[in-house]
Image (cartoon, rainbow, N blue to C red; front, side):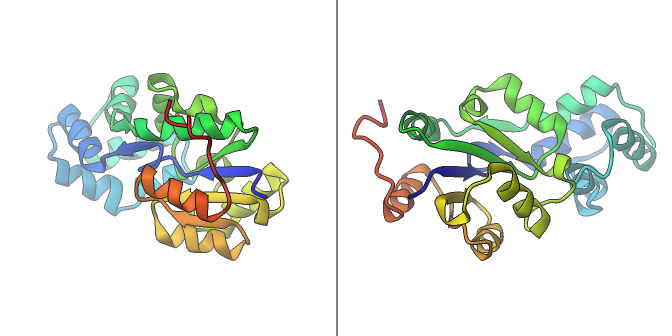
Length: 207
């Protein structure tokens, strides 16, 4: 029996766009979106930030040095975080799982500014009991450390956990830890996966 449900955040609970992030940061310093992408994404600076290897102050300092620019802190993190749109179709599923008494856990590669933005802008994370976050753990999916941290935190046998993520590599890693895991494509497909694992939501789940 599945008791705990772990969800990825990006492109599962909320959709996001790195191109928008790069464009918006570029507007603050007179750089093009592709220039920002080279410095932020292709250099893996953003992913170091999501690993928790850089504080917010350190991240800003490194970015300013690489771009030879100066940013207002609030403007920088707003430009870098206002990139999310909610997947409204999944909210009734979360509510139905909670109503059925299940535990919901967020397992996400993210940064503190991104998490804050989603929490302050949308209510989707209010349904979750626990968070396992890359920048707090110091590791990102598919690193074993973040899955080990998740299993330790939820204190639930892996065979009683269901996990969904839009990235197949992460799903495969989760299965290696014994979790029941499926690739997320859309909410309708998620419901099919849940049914295949014996999770049948009530007929009123979409109400």
